[in-house]
Image 1 (tube, rainbow, N blue to C red):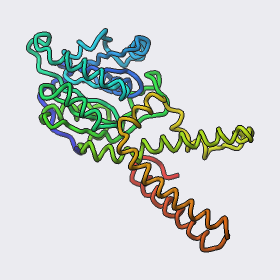
Image 2: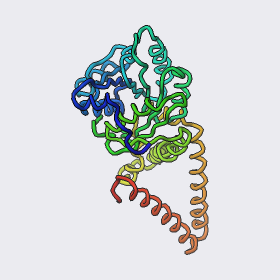
Image 3: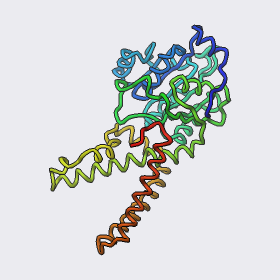
Image 4: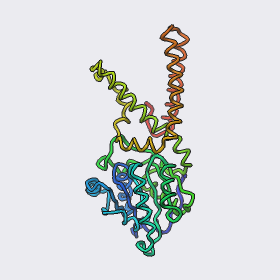
Length: 323
């Protein structure tokens, strides 16, 4: 969804100093911590949080990301919006427990059920968890802010991390427009640009733009490590190109494992496409190695020109500088 839906009376009241919306963040690492900081800094949200790692929770509070820390997920009952910002592989347990908490209407007294969202990069996977544990009573809107870093932890979080980024939303089929607007407003408060998207389309696209690059970076790092056994000085020759190309391999292995396995079907399709292109270029070089000739060089150059053109076109339509 592009554009800004009209604010509710409650939101106007929030801006004028009235009752704040209540956000509950589950997992206060890089993404959860950044979103918490942005919402709290706006003055429109009271932000509380929970993390299975007490040290992370304490750091988040010390860094000003949270108004209050929670000892369990039961505090989610009092929220207006609940954000699951844990690693993907931790989400089955989180959604299971969260579903039990939110379905306990006696514990919730007369309050409305909150809308649940997440920040994971595999939307079909998360939507399946929501169907199993939240539907049809608890509204759910999947979310994925298209930003991040190879570093992890709330100490690297920033209130500006989501500023200007595309924020994909994938509402569940049982979720109403009011709940969707609640998540849209949170995204916009964090400075992001929300866009509603089909979850399968999202997964197919991030498989190529995010998950496949992680595999390529990891493979390249391991190839050079293997060559270093016989040529230890290879590391001295690894300069900026190697550093930039392998940056993603410095990420949290647990986060990467979740990304790749939760979206495995789409990642495999992207890998197959990459393999076909890789084999095509390999064929050009193999022919040149057997009998170097200008026609082969021209074909290699055309391949590189096409790649350069594709990347330049992408840079020119994004916030990134053309380099």
